[in-house]
Length: 252
Image (cartoon, rainbow, N blue to C red; front, side, top):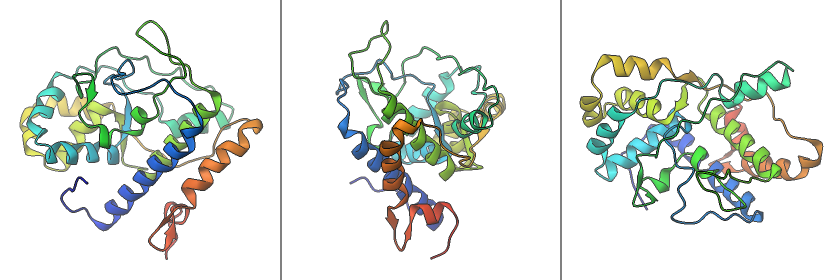
């Protein structure tokens, strides 16, 4: 088991909840038959969206694996120019309010720098946006992934809970989150590499604040499956409280 430097109590609880969401979703998704296997990397790009909490876990892991200097060098090379117009929860709130949602951000082609020898360097702490990439048919740069509707609704719901967990902290593209979190948490080797104020300001300008859940969106015929996933996550116990109680701010 990988061990990290100690976290504050609240941070530790959030990390435990995040791990719980990951594991409960993975267990729920076992009913699907996907073609994905070790060595698949078509979906591995640099512009996945993550929360600040997920970014901090990546930084801790990189520190443990002596990758922080290398990571700083990679972050300097990031050249993102656009930003997501809405977080997942903002998008869902827009749909629930029957408003017109902005078009999804365009996928930026670019091999993820964490991909080395066709394997992920941070696989144990990869963010949920990476974990939920899947396809029931072999995909390539020319063929898109095939994802069952149930899985799509379930992964969206899980993304919403993860965003709710990190609400009011930053949410955005992985490169930008890592730059921001490295500076906020004093990762000196990354700070030294990304010191130019223009890069820091630019990264922060593309970030949004994670938002709380306004509701979920899935058709009635998916109710049993998605409700089972939500119940599995919300009923999980962390010490003496359920995840639902913690997310609702209820005391033990």
